[in-house]
Length: 415
Image: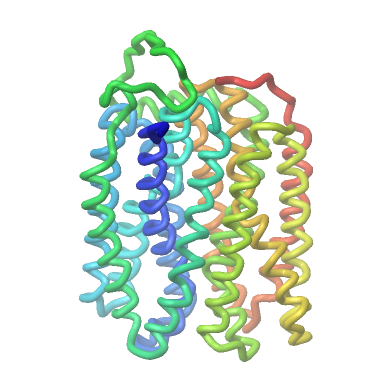
């Protein structure tokens, strides 16, 4: 019987670690209403805390990529998971809005950063030669898997018990993953006398003297990137990607549904239903990114996402379950399907050595967009008492993103 390559064990543990970090961030939408009710905080203030979390974990990406090269995979994953657990613990003791902003916007955002930014491409680049795109697709899809499994559970716990019970579940999962990371994760294949999956022979890589200052490494990568037009096009399109996904849907979809009389658990279930199709769509996107022109993949992903976002306000206003289901399927398939092709283009354009840090900066743009939508959605609701304009504008921006990616110059594959 052929032995399973250890790279797949690394992928599995990374997959579940990203699930825990992903549900922490994507659960923000189900906490808005209970926090608003218990503490009498304004929705825009709560949205600000979640927006800061999205911004911080995104802007930390390039620095996390640099630290991975210096500190190593295992210590970084342990430190990030411990930070998430500490942040979850502190939420039990908060009583003021500024405390929510520090805990969720700061500590939890920092803890989630590694898992939700550069970890997927780092693991795929260092542990896989063959099936690299598929590995990125699977790891990227893991955020949707947590949403699929846990969001309805968290919503039911909030509805029948309290939001503190939901936080307790996330905390328990964080501690469990900390233990699993400690037992399984290794820094690189050479540590256990093997090679990345698909690499038959041991290849001696030339030693690269890295500056040990992660800030210098991160900004050196940025200096290289800003001279290339493809970076600006990828960063701009990814800004819109973040604006139209985790910032808008992840933060405000549940509240948007509630405003039309849809119960909390039903709204959370619809969001988790998207996760079913997101898991499928993002995994397939990783497979496709190994085989087809990634620019055209991104063009269609953004165009179809924009169309689905324009459909949502109409579906809710009509109270049409059929149209809402159509939105859920199409949007779910496309939610983060953009990530594998974006990572692939970054690697093809900048090469293996620099791609992790530069992708970190591109992902930072993604999270700036997410933060704009998370806070902006709260402001739009405050002024108009409705979210319709937020979703309409997001749909138009997606059309712009589709034009950005298609004009990127095609690059030869870089491995």
